[in-house]
Length: 434
Image 1 (cartoon, rainbow, N blue to C red):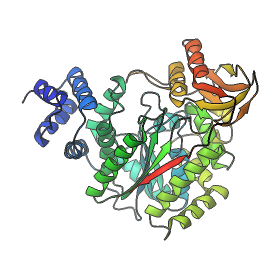
Image 2 (image 1 turned 135 degrees about the horizontal axis):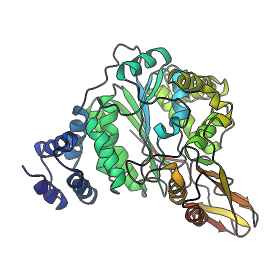
Image 3 (image 1 turned 45 degrees about the horizontal axis):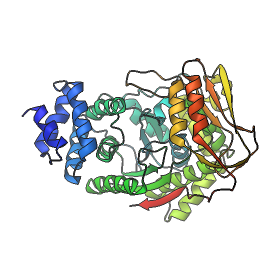
Image 4 (image 1 turned 60 degrees about the vertical axis):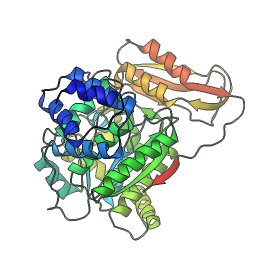
C-alpha cells in the first residue's frame, strides 16, 4: 500500500476501505507518513469529502490510536459539551460550571484555537498558573472531587487526532465536515462520557457558513454518537456576529466572570444557560428539559456556577482571584478605538473579520508552532441592531505589539456595516438535532 495512491484515489472521490484509512491514520501518527503527504490527504478529503462509513472508520481509528479514559469508578452520568468553534465563544467556561454545580459530572477534553476561532484551553491558560496538562489520574481525581475538570489532549488519548488537528489548522483544511466530525467525536468517545451536547456554529464566524452544512455536520456527529450508544444532542447556533462582547483569551475570561455573576451579555447568557440545561437533562438530574432550564438558571442566580469555576481554577493550579481582580490576568499595553463613520443602525458585524483581526495581533495561531498572546483581542461596544452616532465607538482593539495593528484595525473597521434602518432580529438558536 502506497500513501500517494491513497491520496490520488481520495482526490478523485473514491471511497477508501477501512484498512486504507487505518494505514493513513497509523502512518501519520507513528511518523512513517510525512507532514506533506498527510497535508495532501487532508486537502483531498476537504475537496472530495467522505462517506458516513469512511467517517465512522476514521473516528474509530483515531479513538483507537490511544487509550480510552475509564471513568466508571466515578458515580453519575458523565456529560460533556463541545462547540465547533466560534468568535467570542466562551460558553464552555460558563455552561460546564453551571452543569457541574447542578451535579453533572463534566469531563471537558478541550481544544486550542483553530483558524480565526478561539480555543477553550488557550482561554484557560491565560489564567496564571492554570494547568491543562493534567495526567489521566489527576483528571479522574479532580472529576471525583469537583465534578468538573478541563484537560487538553494527552499523549495517551487520541494521539492521532492531536497530530491531524494541528496540521489542519496550518493547511486550511479546518472547515471539512468529515474532519471536524471525526476529530470531535474521536476525542469525546475516548474520554469516558455517557452523553454529549454539541454547539454547531453557522455563519461568518463559524467553520460552517451555510445552515445546510451545519445541519449535515450535526447529523453526522449525532449519528456517530448513536452508533456508539451515547446520547448526543446538537444545537445549531448563529455565528454571524461574535458571541458576547469580548474576543481574545484573557478578555473572554473576564466576560465569563461577569456572566457567571449574572452581569454578562444577554446572548452569551442565554446560550450558556440552554447548553447547561441540556447537559443537566442528559445527565438525568431532572425529568424534563424545562426543569433542567430552571435548575441551570438557579445555579446562575445563586452564584454556585461562579463558585464552581473558582474551585476548579484553584484545583488546576490557577489563581481563582482573577475572576474578581482582572488586573491579575494578562493585560494589553496598547488600545485603539474604532469609530463609526456615520450615524445609523449596526446591520452587520462580520465575526470572521473580527476573529481574523484578533488572531492577527496575537490571539490566535497561523502555524501549529505559534504561541498565543493571552492579553490581546477586541472588545465590542455595540451589537447588531443597536443605534450608533457618527463618531461613536464601535469597538476597541487591545494589543501588546505594534505589528499588524494597522492591518487588524482596518479589518475590524470593515467588519461593521451601518444602515439607515434597524435590521430584522435573528434567532440565536436555529435548530436542534438529536
